[in-house]
Image 1 (cartoon, one colour):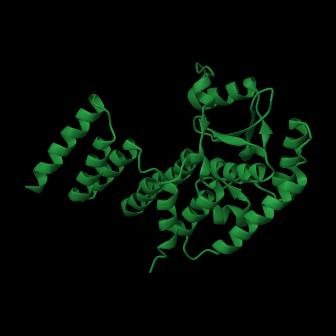
Image 2 (cartoon, rainbow, N blue to C red):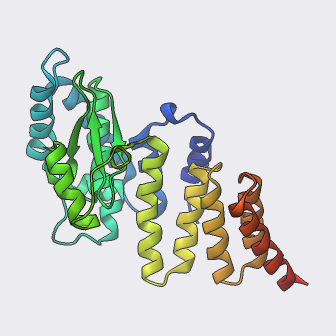
Image 3 (cartoon, helix red, strand yellow):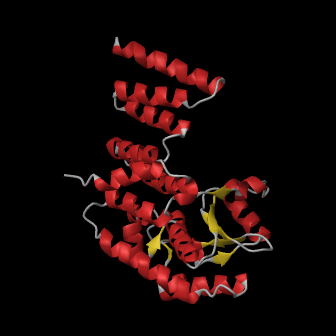
Length: 275
């Protein structure tokens, strides 16, 4: 029987203000759901060890550049964390327990590890919702230091970010402020879980995709598009009552306008199938 504790934890996280979410702790709960047989307690101990090591390795009074180098030495060097280039689409790369065991992961999973270590040492940071490649930014009086955890914590200036953008968006893409918008704790967790949802959809595992979607809703119960997307998934597997519930939740969270009208039309269409 599945352990109900992790999903209860996700529901509690869904009620918290973003700043109060323990990012790595929440990702650990998601990993427990994804791999219930895995040793989550060993992963929890590894996170504690990493926090202590980061506190010792990152002197608070050092210059930000020196702290970046120290953080990279700790995570990419001593601990051996890096991007999984050989098996990028392996679902284990999105599971924090497996990432801590294998020292390999997706950009967003590695970003959670880096932010966990930096924050443990008292260094404020956030995710960067960069197109197709998750990054992190750490606080610096001269401006945020943007790092790529997938590439050993490489620092990215405007030129490097522009080159990265053209690789994913085409040669005409121009780096703009929107490409560097901060991603809070909840948004990072959603991006992590969306990796599981999309991979399960690609594999034709609609039941697994629905489970991931449900966990996303536990984390972010006030996000209308998530309810609508989950409603569409339920409709695909002929779960009409569940689809209607999701669409109605989405409608209640959506302001008047075209999006709300689209939801009403979908509700009316599905309601006809119940008669």
